[in-house]
Every structure is written in C-alpha cells, then in structure tokens.
Image 1 (tube, one colour):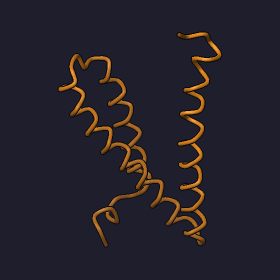
Image 2: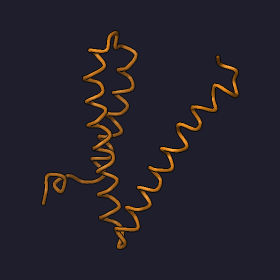
Image 3: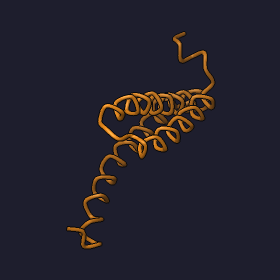
Image 4: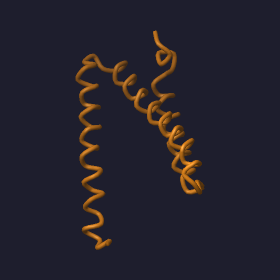
Length: 97
C-alpha cells in the first residue's frame, strides 16, 4: 500500500481543515509576494490532505467506489463553475466599480 494507506481518512480530513485554517489566518500577515509563496505551498499541502482524506473516506465506506468518486468530482466541478460566477455577480449587484 502507498504512503496514504497508513493514515486514517478522518485524520487526513482534520489535518487538512486545520492547515487550511492556519493558512488563511497567515495571509493578512504577508507583506510581500515572497512571504506568500510558502503560504501557497502550505495551502497545497492542506488541500491535498483534505482531498485525499475525502477520497479515502468514500472509498472505504462505499461499495460503489466509482459512483462515490464521481459524485466528489461532480461537486468539485460544480463549485468550479458556481464560485467564479458568484464572484462575477457580486460586484455587479453591489455597484462596485
């Protein structure tokens, strides 16, 4: 089994959420782009831990692994559409120029 198989899915999810919280609390303290680069790397680690924890959790708990994984991919793709759409509509509805 690969390295990810040694970790519990819930611990990966919890560590991803904790690292994400730490990352977003670090952004206001970055004063230059050189300080943002390590924060971005930590964000990548947090996202991958959260994502792999969700995949492992769905794979362990569901008989239909392909269906569960497809639903996760569908939710991710839907959020990739809805997020930018909401960000584009926000300035239009609140008269930001």
